[in-house]
Image (cartoon, rainbow, N blue to C red):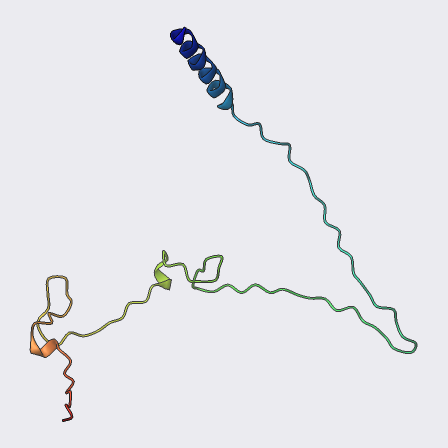
Length: 113
């Protein structure tokens, strides 16, 4: 009896997973039309009203930016490299070797008694 119930449970599980894996069909695309309406206030007697247009200007910059406005660091022109001249000995990667006195910045600490 237990074997029969387990066989039925496995078959039911197999059928439900087989039907659950069917791909969803894409809904038909709808075309949305936008209407542009201009709202004008009622004109006062003797006052001439003019409609104002809002113009948007796009400026092309050399620096490429992401959608949030921050510079996109994948491009060469957005990367800035700080050039520092090392006075003393350097490590293999070119950075200053801080074991040497010539590369250390000296600041005197005055102790008060």
